[in-house]
Structure formats: structure tokens, C-alpha cells
Amino acid sequence: MKQDLNFPKIVDFSIYKTNNSKMVNIFIKINGNSYKINQYLTIFSLLLYLGFKIDFIIIDHNGTLLRRKDWSKTVLNNNDHIEILTIAGGG
Image 1: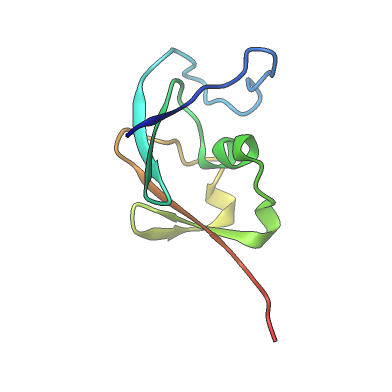
Image 2: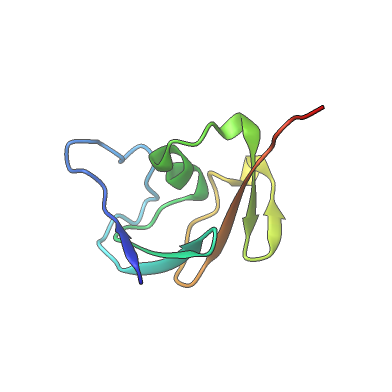
């Protein structure tokens, strides 16, 4: 079952969007769950939207660990698979 990630109209995500702002239907998987997004986004903008504390996570993008410096350059495409992994300390 696909879940929509619809962005509230009252929030301005234009600072996070890529230059191509046309409406689209992109289907992605995040941690094994299917989602539909309606605009082109970077990994970084997705993480901000989802409310992650970016200092404590690593990203697997289509089977490859993505360097933090590339999060804002990597645009989500149809059928991308994202794994968001949190770093936990322990003792």
C-alpha cells in the first residue's frame, strides 16, 4: 500500500526543492515502506520534511551509503530505495 507524502501548502519548501518544480508522481521506498511524492526533492529536503536529526543518521540510497555532503545534491527518482539508519550509542 502506497502512502502519499503530501507537503502542506502553508509550508514553503522552495528552499529545499530542486530547480525543477513541476508536479510529478514519484514512487519511492523508505525503510521498506512505499510512498508517493509529488515533487522532485533531494535526500536532504526529504530528511528535513520527515523531521530527522541529521547529525545522528546515515543514508543508504539504492544500496550505497551516501556521503552527507551529497545529500543536498542527490535528487529522488522513481523507484529509489532509501534506508534511514539512526546511530545509537550504548554501553
